[in-house]
Amino acid sequence: MRVLFYIIIFIVVGQFTLVGKPMVVAHRGASGEAPENTIPAFNLAWKQGADAIEGDFHLTKDGQVVCIHDGNTKKVAGENLVVKNTTLAELKKLDVGFKKGAAFKGTSIPTIEEVFETIPAKKKIYIEIKCGLEIIPPLLREISKSQLKKEQVIFICFDAKVIQAVKMRAPHFKAYWLSNVKRNQDGTFTPSLEEALTTLRKVKADGMSSSRAGINDDFIAKLQMAGFEHHVWTVNETEIAQWFMDRGTRSVTTDFPGKIKGALKEKVSN
Ligand code: G3P
Ligand code: CA
Image (cartoon, rainbow, N blue to C red; front, side, top):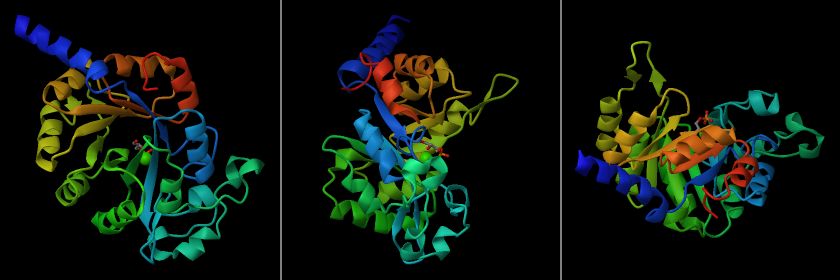
């Protein structure tokens, strides 16, 4: 019992001393106030003091890596083009800003190179792979071409096989498996803790980034005790961000990085 107590103290204290304070990650940029996955959203996130940005990436017909959430352009541009069947030049003609307000009219879908260019020294990017394994070689080429250091780049994906492939090709980058966590009526979880740990070990992930709902203290603590980091998305309320940070969650992904960063100044990374 005493040993367990010291292990828990070590983990909790370690979160703040050994590995630094938790990070505030701008979900699709500062997407609460600017068009998601665009340069204005990423620049606003930096202006608001975000520690990292999160962006969603797909491959175009001509092999370019672009930042957009869905596999088609309908939600952000109105016009419905399928990203993998469309060239970069064709995608660049679309306006993905006007829906968020007149101030953003004329904003285009950025390439990953353009997104990388916004990243200040020491800040990070969470690259969410939204398509399949085919994007990994071009993504790694883009990272090599950039000025980014390995600590600045983190991969995330819902498909554990993609995380496994990233860790096989480029083990020096951190990679987190994304998963929703559902609490069932009988108190069990889907995935169960054991299933989550099996997946994380199999694909050699560094941690799990979970949905905010469903997960509880015990699930988070046991993940951490098994040696995995816990991260969470999408948290726009200060009290909930605080709840996760108090449990050693390493990053909180939010649409409002300025609000979360400002409210939790003491707790989050400077
Ligand atoms: O950070 C993870 C989160 O972005 C996953 O969900 O749909 O916003 O890409 P989604
Ligand atoms: Ca995402």
